[in-house]
Image (cartoon, one colour):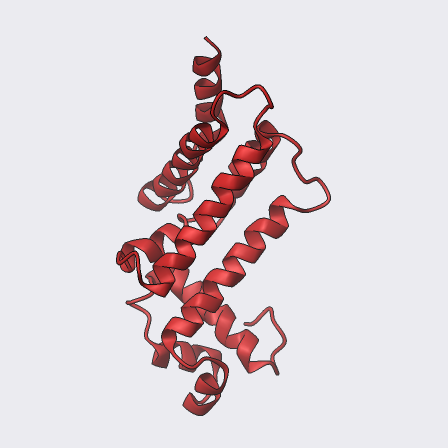
Length: 183
């Protein structure tokens, strides 16, 4: 059942939480359900995570790390087009049903909440990353990066609404914006 080391309760808790948070939502997933599915006692759970919010932060950290490891792998993009191509493949992977960060932001809309702030940190990093990959002659790389993040988030939202069976043309949409800015 578990892909992580069976004897590592923290890893089991995180794996189960990842699956449940992503598929059912944060507020809909209670710690008792996570403990039961991970086969850990309450004391074990709280030894590893002082609260459900601490577990959600760890979940977001793992999702963030996986995303950046994907983009920073051996074929790391050197320009914005390559990055968008990789993100397009990521968004359209089997099992992707939306953006875990947007889902958390929707459940925790208070901008001062630590979970919401973690979402903002992820999105800010994506904005900086895309802006840095823009061609040197781009008039406003930050503005263009914001447009691209809107396209990425829109594509992830479409996966959530229409399901993972429908591929979303993220790269094609971004290409149209590139062309309109050149005209």
